[in-house]
Length: 206
Image 1 (cartoon, one colour):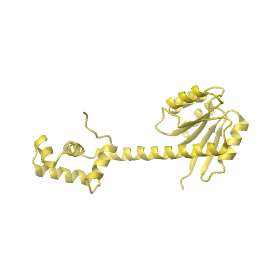
Image 2 (image 1 turned 90 degrees about the vertical axis):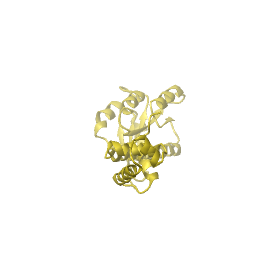
Image 3 (image 1 turned 180 degrees about the vertical axis):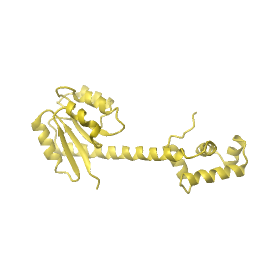
Image 4 (image 1 turned 120 degrees about the vertical axis):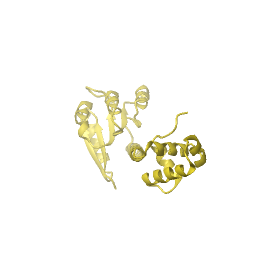
């Protein structure tokens, strides 16, 4: 099982300690504590991706200000905002800034653990999607311009002879390009090639 990392950012030491103790009971979870958003941001470039339990009301940068800086990073952290009770407007702002969830303090331990688990699932799905997209773009980059043209024709659902007509090629030449692009993309079926094309964002403009 992959080790997960969670960063607890809260200026209240008793809250921070309680959260760290609770989260430490989970398997394969490394827990790190920070007493302010400023401290967390000072080290953010050196941290591994993970989930952030981020208190809103802190001296220095508050939770939303920290969140604004985090969302500018390339999908590195998933954030759960911790707020005081009745802070609905803060929760709405947090959602708009890309927070995965929010919890009112004091929060039920079982609910907190459920929210954290859901956040990790979301983060891991996002990372898989990013990895697939990057792999697909790298694969597409190996194609020649003509091979890419043929692939776009296939994405649009055109038959070989239609692609040939539009590109002023023979059907046989299109078949050759199609075979070459399949080899370069390391796929054995058209559906696999199309999956890579869509993952790479190779979708024709309307």
